[in-house]
Amino acid sequence: MKTRHFLLAIAAGLSSFGVCAEQDISLDLDSITIQVIYISMPGGPAGLGNSTIRKVCMDGQAYLLLTSPNGIVGLSASFKNGKPEQCTLLAPTNN
Image (cartoon, rainbow, N blue to C red):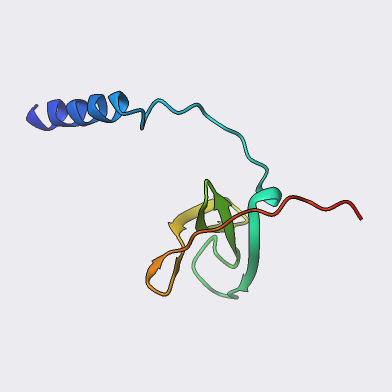
């Protein structure tokens, strides 16, 4: 019971600072992708035989997104030189 009240207090505190009050946004995966790495692991763990790691840029921070044929299976912050990797998306060019 104490844990539930503690979690509610944290959620209320974060909400008052606007952390939880952000609106949902929808992003096109291709438009935020910085780099793609394809991984083939024949005989690997179930569901991870052919996986893709995408480095994506969201809100100025780079993330590594692991996908498999079954969907997204992991998300982690990307680090460079021991620090969280910052990023910017370039505007598309019209050629």
